[in-house]
Image (tube, rainbow, N blue to C red; front, side):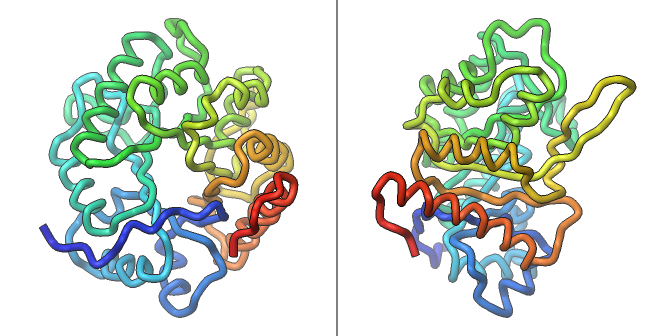
Length: 292
């Protein structure tokens, strides 16, 4: 194993941004006014190469979170051992402050599907994902966060609401929760439930990170649905839900996600600054010290 040149830097309760290839040179050429960065783990599983060397250079200046998109925690056949081993090698070298994955599945019979597919909220599915989360945490040697999904259809077989499913994963495995407030808004609109009661049902002490993002609106015949595409600025209802989450949670590491239709870096950083303003406001409200 290659020794790590990094210590584990805690992720500050400030806004961070996802590091995407389009913006790598900006980060290499100048210090950027952002609290931390997050990468998609699967983009860095290969050893060496210019991509990993760039991340190594940037990592020296920013706390890092690793967000996985391919582990497929909901796969009934279990986790891919080679994939998990490569993730461990990545984590051991870059020493991220937080490691997260999705409550979804994307692998079946060795075939990888380019999507984060939803699970039925049943005891059987809960047992599968808890077993996989426990296995991942044991191999990685660290706690993992799991993220609530965005969804567009409901399974007739589901026997519990999503928030109860998420809470049970955390309770049974000791994992943390990554609360994506845009996903809550998208799912609440698509399935016609109230978003704020979702926040009330989540175990607040398990939440360690928040995601915010933009989404798009699609019309299918007479039906309007929201699609979680991370391709636009955050809209006001999501900012409102973010404020409601902060009122309950207090200041929390918050990622501004933007993955498609990527803007110039200053536009992305401006969105992150909006989140920092709200984080400072909740510190003021709760009488907490401001974070530089």
